[in-house]
Image (tube, helix red, strand yellow):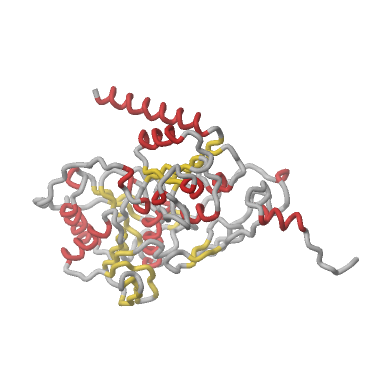
Length: 406
């Protein structure tokens, strides 16, 4: 037999053709990549990935043994339980909880808390008001303290600072961690630091030993300083917890938080035109592409959902949407909590631009397109029919809510 290595032109063509159904199977699996802050991110779901506790991911689908014939039912892996019966100290985390759920920024913060807690400390999460999160255990929370009451609802930073001071008096955490974000954590952390009379470490993106490194000089320089007691951390400050589950035991304050005479009056939420929200700051984006045939219906659906409109480059080039609505590496990088892609096949530049979105919903006719592979939820069908059904569902939901309120 000849030792000459022969090329496979067909396999090379499939690897170059993103629209081919076998294109994804020809691509190498990406196990690690560099995030925007220079942190090397790892894929915890990759086969063979070894987590921080030495647990190795095992392929239970049969794909490594070759074929669908060997695939069995999905086996739910029970993660090992991490317990801290008598914590030597606490690391307190105050997540933003935008929409009542942990964001990716909050999960990174919990990962950093576990780096600081080690094996002897416990991570204490402090949450204000009602929430919808049911994954505190897998996110790395050892103790959960929910501060309920009308005084904490809405925009009440002064009262929340009083609540955090009560937590500080009772648990005396070794470190306080808050997200340095525009969703409330940045302001609350600075107010809390002023109340404690401490200097916080801000915009921290890495903690090494006894030093924390934060951004300075308009984000162009790094500032290293000793690890402060109060840390305001940036996104991707650490790897989120993924290899263990935690108890998330509920705890309570021994004394009620002191009520402060607020100098701020919360007038409630103010309606904002979704079109006036910058794309980079939008939480809910409804984006259209080449597969949209009825643009008036698309705009009507976006208005019914109260979403900010976006578009692919093809839709912008064809004149259906303005240039500032373009999403992608050649347009605007977005970080929406929900991103709905209607008729967008998923060019590599577009997928790069939505890489930081939490949940992606795809509406498309092609079940093999790249956007369907990226999406968390996919709807296969004609976009016009789906959008009409979506409008009807939204109107029915609002009418029912009005009847219940009456």
